[in-house]
Length: 73
Image 1 (tube, helix red, strand yellow):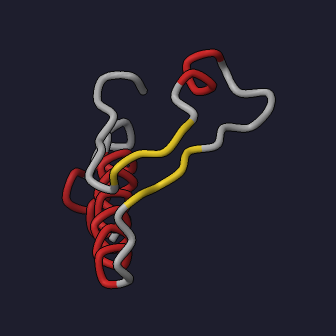
Image 2 (cartoon, rainbow, N blue to C red):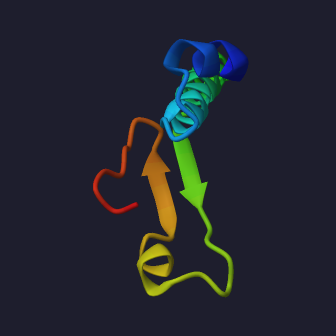
């Protein structure tokens, strides 16, 4: 995929690598969500590392599977 995008954009400074990474990440997220649904998982627990930043530590807890954190990354 990355090679095809590279040929399409033909610019060494283009953002095609970032585009490929974000598209693959979104595809993986869709697959993960579908797997959770198939397994009947409805709740998720977020446990940050001990050395996590204060924002991540404050988010520790249990969430509904449909929860989406926006604007904090």
